[in-house]
Image (tube, rainbow, N blue to C red; front, side):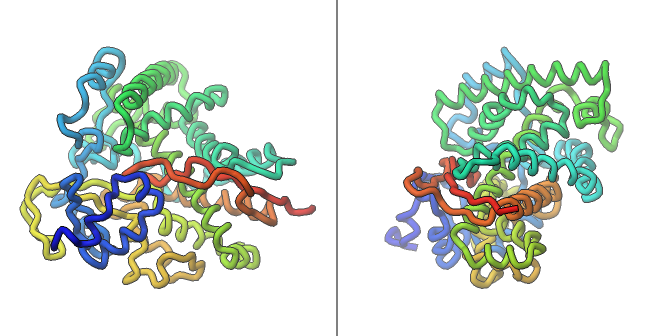
Length: 418
């Protein structure tokens, strides 16, 4: 394709494009659903069928890719030194690893958020929603991220892990420090700051893990201390810290915060869908799926080509990288008619790939869905009206090649009269 192709006018690494990437995604699906980004050299996969084809072949398209290591020269030595001298180098997460390590980690994680266990957690989730909304009583304007969308999943995962409530304030900074380097958009100075914050968090959890060895409790930290994989192998401290900080803490709250925030903005911009929900509250279950589809919290994940192959008519060489763009696949008009709009009656509402499929299906999918459902049940029961606050800062997204996180969302609400 010639250099004059409109695709070459777009750069998905540009924060301005990331504010609303969907026009670019649509163009890519139409012109080149496997598109090699000239700015990075790796491929974007943007159609639903091709994304699913990649996901369903995890041995051919491996997941062992760290976004932080993709820069020229890999992870900076300064970062390695901070972890080596002051803490523990984080290992690959469950979502960015391949067997046998992936199987070793998933053996522990898989049992934590089964449908049965999430049903047992639902009273905690509902109570957290109610207590947060109670704390906002009397406020007519909210900064929705800070007031509700961030603390809700954070409180829940912290309680499940076994973190004292008094320490929750520290978790926002720590969680951001884990997630931001994956965005591929942070400065060197911020990346060093993030590494030091992660080390601080590691030492915090080392103390808690030691405490659980001496004083077991009914929490995930105690399960982690006693856990063994299917081969009877215990987890090293380095593995335990990675699982707790990345797989549980960061993955257990950042993406849910993003989905809840995006979901409210979608509803404010779609009064018809909001009216439908009010007339039939059971549609909240389909709302959760439509939020995940329309504003996939993880916009994409990397895969490495493990052997020469062909995908969608494009020849790929061993070692080449793909970015499987869930955010593009989930708006593919071939799969989802009127793809850019909420449809609370969409057939097979959960067909999207926002939570992955197969070997790398999101461990916390059932928990994330229940948190979305409980959040919107609570919000719709509490408030009769939502609108963007006049004169407030415009909504914008944190620059990230990976995520889709609104920085803030200023909302004016009107409580229901009792």
